[in-house]
Image 1: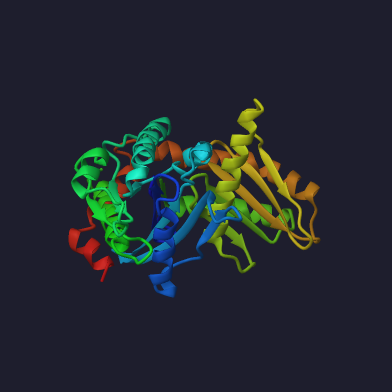
Image 2: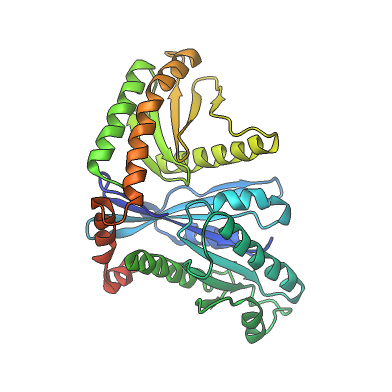
Length: 194
Length: 159
């Protein structure tokens, strides 16, 4: 649910990075934080365990500039990928405007990817959203690993509609900003069309 | 959700009453999905992070309450050495966060918050109801704010 504040002249949108555990959701957000200029970003908050696994969420507010006098602010969230944190994932989807699914390209993680897409669909439904109409981008991460599944095979298994698909290596930033730009455009176009 | 300047003024007036009467340092109204709605007080704070974490804390507490069969915990209190936090749910959609120090007390903050919660709930309810009605002024304002955004505007955001 986008939040338009006429008093503050700002528009806030919420984007959630979703996907299986250890797929690179937090790494995406960390890269964005690292490469965004200081006056355009807020603090990166990570609620993580001692072993740096996301426990509740990561949060990064970024501000891209103004459109028609409104400051465009995007709140980026990640969810915990581990299956037993499902309750946390549901909470973070509240008020979401767009979702990036970060898939792990490794063959051994195919089942986890499919399970996470199904779980996303169910949790969105529970919050009253429909993945079919939600702004959505698919990022195929870890493309540099030798065990990465062929692109066509991954797309066939994970693509759920005509969503844009990006190959990425989040640790080096490849594909990270391309994915972010794409989801932001989709969110704004969706709001525009309502 | 659309907050008009007139809505914001109503919220700020109510928050200022709580701030003064509770002798608090900062009073903050947050939407449950994370963004801030209005804030008053003199403290230098990262309000964006504060809003997101407050919403997260309340969401987690709601999860806890449902696990033990409670509808919800309407109030949270975090006691610190210098500053303490008092968090109240405002209706179903918003959260009121009050930060106070030794100049005030939990009892006073709780009393003043409870006194003004009904008015805050009413004001928020009106905003939410208006946001639900299609064709009403807010819906029109909301759609026009986005309709004016061109594809070029969106591209320009990325430099």
